[in-house]
Length: 181
Image (cartoon, rainbow, N blue to C red; front, side):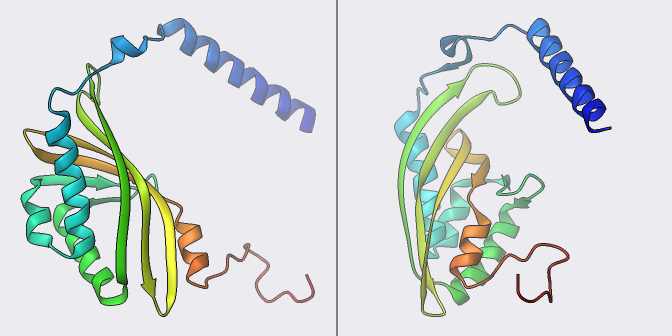
């Protein structure tokens, strides 16, 4: 049974890869992206937005985003509107002290496809103190900017690392209450 499942899995993977490679030609870097002509402005918009959120200046943050701005992540199914983001940060301000962010940014223009537009990539570390514990974790944000405003973004960070730094433990399903393991 295991051999049959393995064979079927490998066959399906090979067929998928073959159909993908036959259906599209890999584009070169220069065919896909170009220099962002608004590089300095767009980087400033995104980094100012991040600084405004972290420092608690929600009015400034709102002024840097379109009203229909949408944020995605860190999980695949997570998404929030601008208003929902502001509500989440209102809660963070109540429990997090000494909020700090470090970042480095770059930018590029996607020429075609579903991600066409100007993008800013920011990565760095976010830290704060909560209940006397210093929490630090790396993050990465990809943000689309149009006409000097944030359109959408996706954030990536490790939620488990944050939870563990806060003192939470991950317990596998079915192992709760077992002793001696």
